[in-house]
Length: 498
Image (tube, rainbow, N blue to C red):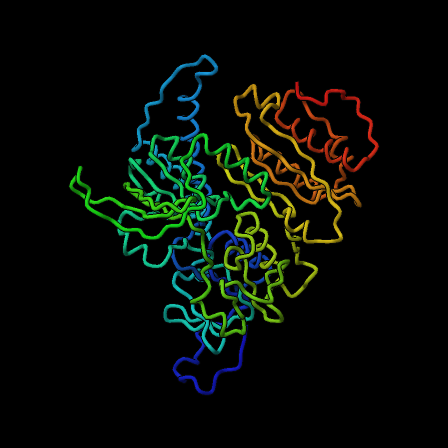
């Protein structure tokens, strides 16, 4: 994006070393997709990146966490099969667990690295970009003028002020936890969002003494109180959780037993009583923040709010107002999810072409999130508070409990609850929230139904095989239908799941 040179600027900084049609800043999921797509349409596209040339998902997010969860699930099944008459005890080799996590993570990363290696050297710049007051990109010893800029700088872990100094080497985050060479003996996890829940439960299942802290009496940012309460009930059977707790101090102190030092957390519990936790590590999982505040986007006229979120953001395209600036992926702090970042990067990379007929712009995805704890937690479409705040929406809530659902009970995973929010005027699904078994698959089906504007009747015309956990979805849909009083005849007389 070009701006008129600032007449007050030092002339030594006005000499442009390179002019390009498109500059992509950041080489994560969104940035790489934007770069690949833009290069199909423009010859002079560059990508600038500071740090690793893979993605957050592969390096420190989705993939290593799922590798850890996979190991944890194996251990849990071995240690908790007594009710089936299968008695076993897992021997967990912590070093082998963590070595496999890193090895498989690096295997996945190698595919992305090979792709990056295949890009022409002149299109890649390793360094930290800064956009100056002239609208030029400063990086290393270059001054680059770009007609269009795609910002895809991703996000970083958030650490409360002062904690890094106070906790020192006992503090870990989701960016560093997978570098542990062995399983810790004890661990405090601060934050009960998706990252905190997944890692807390995985380490617990692998034999680590885990305590989870969260300021709110909520998990996974659930907004449906009934689903939240059910999730807490299910997770409490396995995890030690201090929800509604207020951490007042953190630090390290001498360990009288090992003569070393241990981490501590002073906190007030939900009853207002002062307590202290002590252990080996504190895993801070208090969310991620977008990497945009030091980039200089304000020099282009991009305004950020108090949470570093860009104002005037077109959520369909990532475009900022009338500027030729696109902020995509985690950088825009809209929906920091891989599939959203992928679509936003693809769309921004398409938009930079001159012939708009060549631009394929993917519509904003139906809101959809999954937490891969056990039982899984899923949110799809509109949340219950969003629906309740819209006076035009007359809704009903179809429900099903998985506590006695046939296949769930057979599998010994019978703890859960699904709410489907149906619109009475349109016979459509507005959204859903769920904690329970197979939630990732039920969530995908509901997201597909919302995206393709399927009616409740359309959904119920679909076969549901018996016996499956997915039959619970049919029960909830029938509950929506019953409250809407929609006439429907089914050949299946089995309303139950047996």
